[in-house]
Image (cartoon, rainbow, N blue to C red; front, top):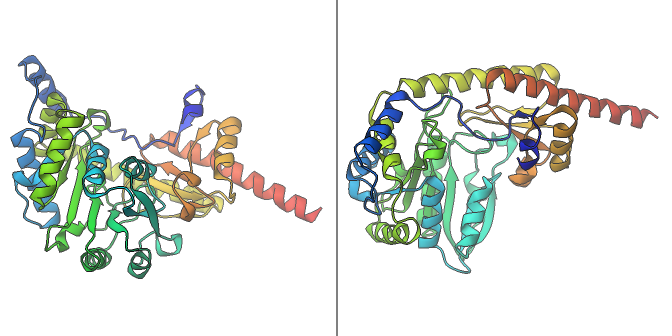
Length: 372
């Protein structure tokens, strides 16, 4: 990313940054709050109206009855996850995250003093975990299991049956199950299912955000929803200690996003799906391998090179295309790079065409060397 920012000609396919813009009614709500002087502190757990709106959303999306008292508003989803790690993990405790994984999960868990272990999600299974492999990764020190569906970086959407199995595994081993649901609104013809739908004893912690759904990445408003009031109390104290409270103006904007018109979300999701289809058609026509995503806005592309860091650097230097190397995400992304489908369509397709040129040229070079 740092290298790409220094290249004025770079086509940026490396960052998960929605391009739809923030809806006008959201901007106006925040601006009105500023004009009215609503710029002071709120409760460390967030505005009551926003907590109520989040509770309604979690209830509607998961089927688990959630009240405003079950919600803490956070400074983005990663703040919520980091505080949850601090609350439920200690030195020597282990948390299981998927491989491939969004690297910030491991960073936050490590900062909490925990040990990070992984369970595989394999390309041959569409990057959906196999319950038996998750169970096999659990040790006596495991305290929490993290899932993300729709997933970053794979775009996998976990079926209900798999999520039910994961909740049962968490129950059997007395683990917290942390569900990163930042992409819950972005699926392509398959249903989103929250593991909270199968929660009977308050062990599933839902973490969400307005960042990806509403294009509000820099507004930094997210939430944690849990039926554990002991955990909620700890999260409230942690929030007070770390940020005092999330931005008041940002919270007002988030409330407008959640409760206002949703047309912009539908348009954005349809656009991501169309870009997904155009991108995979291009890659298939050029003979490149990929795993077709069913949600989020990422695409893992097989670049036929185990050194994905080196490939990404060469692609940027020679063809001015920035992608995220698979090595960033874990062993199961070996030989692949992550491409963001949130880039403008012409940029996405031109960038993928250049990526394909690089892979095909390297393939031809290897064939020539072998023949020689």
